[in-house]
Structure formats: C-alpha cells, structure tokens
Length: 412
Image 1: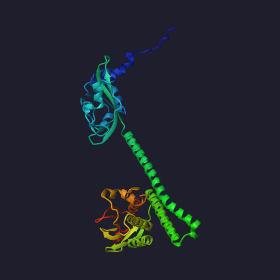
Image 2: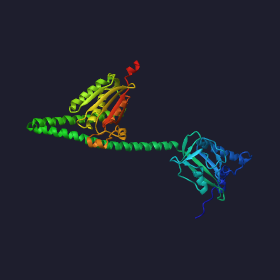
Image 3: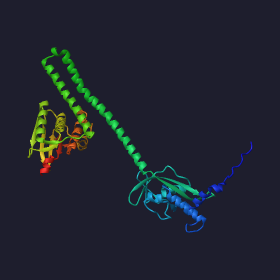
Image 4: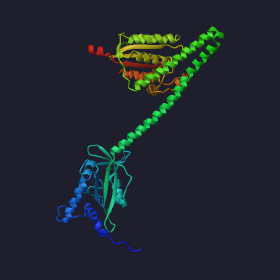
C-alpha cells in the first residue's frame, strides 16, 4: 500500500510545543524578566495576563519549592498575597480534612517536588488570615525541561468548600433519615405491643359478656366491665398522646386563652381520683392561690393527667401523690411528687425523649414512653419549662413552670 500523501502543513513537535515550552520557562523563573524588552518579554506578559484572568487558582514554584508565580484567583483563595520566594504554598495555614494541622513541607506540592511526580486525590483545608477556612483539592504537577530535568511545578487549587458542605448536609440528612426510620420501626413495634394488650382484653371480655353474660355471676360481669373500661381508657390515652405529639411536632399552632391554673389542677385531680379511688392525692397551695396562665385547657388537662398517671403507675399502691402549686419569680409552678421507683440524674435528662423508658419502669409497668415526651411538647408550646429530678427520701419530682398570662404582664 502506498504511503498517504503528506498534509499541506505538518508542524514539527518543536513548533507545536513552543508556546507550552515558553510558558513553562516563564513560570519556572527561566524566562526573560518582564522588565526586558522584545518579543519574548511581550509573550511572557501575555501568558501572565491570561493566567491572571483564569477563574481557577494556580501557582508555580521552582525545583526547590519557592513560589515563582501565582494568579489573582489564588490570591482570592488564600486570602493573602504571598511574597515570591515563599516555599511550597501561599496558604496562611493548612489543615488535614480531620482538622489536624498540616505543615507546609508535607503539603501535596512538597510531595510532588520531592518525589518528582503528579499528586492526586488530596483534600486539604486552607485557613486565611481572617480565620475563614476553605476546603480545596490540589493538583500539583512537576514541570521538566527538554532534557527531563525537574525545573519546578504547577499547582491548580480547586475550591470545593460548597461541595463539601453539600456532602456534609447530604450525609447529615441520610443519618437523620436512618435515625428516623429506626425510631419509626421502634415506634411501630412498641405501639403495636401496647395497643394489642388493651384491645385483646377489651375484645376477650366483650366476647364473653356477649356469649355467656347471662350465665356469669354478677361480680364476674362487673369485674369484666371494669377491665373493659380500664383498658379502653388506656387505649384512649395512648391515641390522645400520639395525636397530640404528632400535631405539636408538625408545628400546629395552639390557641391560648387565660386559664385559672388552680381550677384546671383541681379538676384534673378530681378526674384522676374518680378513675383511681384507691390512690390518695394531696393538693398543697402556697399563696397566692389564683395563678393565671395563657394556655389551651385541653393541653393543660392532658399534661396533668400524664404526670399524675406517671406517678400512679410507678408508685406503690399504698403511697400518696402530692401536688404543689406556687408562684416563683413570676412563674406559675406545679409539681407532682411521688414515692415511687425514682430516677437518677442521667435518667432525669432522658425521660422526656420519646420512647425512652428506664429498666425499672419497664419492669414495673407497660408503656410506650410517650407520656412525658408529650408533656415536654405541651409545656414548650405554652412557653414554659419542665423538669424531672429525684426526690429527697425516695421517689420522683416532676414539675413545670409557665409564664404569667399576657394580660397580667400588661398590668404590671
């Protein structure tokens, strides 16, 4: 086969590479100084103008690692204008991605010059003199002359700060989603178990009453009806807590009206005593007795029912529950005190977390672990604060404080 005809102009490698060689020479310090006259100096200035116009940070060093050139994008990334001759990098301070300080002589540019090879795959953090940090990826590449001798290196710095923030946000979102799914699975397991128990009791007793009611003794029928009523109430409380927690977490607005806290507390205690006639509840006041707060009455009642129910569930049958009310530093303070299983300091910090239950609580009674979480959400929605702590002499103290009604604040 005949050789193909030559192209009209086939540039030699030297002709093709001359601009690149000129650029390498200029950036490695071997070019004619900018103050010189002539075509070479003009080309040098043109190359520098082009590199200054680039939006990507880049700089060069000689073979010893001394900076010979940097463009304006590098100045913007570093937050400073280094002097020519500084070593390795123009960054004020360098850090590894995990926050450990990085010496300039161990930076990727130093590695590229020491080992005479391009370095890739690094991420570092540059701190500017004003304290602002920039996450970047360097791409240092050695520069060699025609004989293959190392004459310097060029480094391109890519700012990946926003990319890193987006990745961190994505990882945080993924972690939150995984945590949310874990909580959801735990929630479904707990709720399924807690709902199954009252539903089984209600269904079983109702079925027996329907099929054999006439043959059962009156005392047995009364006991079965009591079981149905008790388990129905338990089921109702679980559902109420779930619905309220869902509304509050969704940011549902609460319509607040002035409420006489004394009346609400008295009513909650009477309702609780009617359902639990064997439990003594003592109410103590400290003057003044008339405490007025802005609240939703239904929320307040559920808050008190949950606190009283919690004290009842985890206390011995013969012990009493004490409820105190007072005005402290302008806040209306209510405390529910029991002589039950108690709690330590760590447990006191965790009891308001949804689904959290201590080992002692799990051994003592069934439950989902939502009641106290609902209490916290209610108090926060009303602009107050809530706490739990161990009680002197044994037992627990659960209390909440609410700010005075806005009308009272206006009067003051």
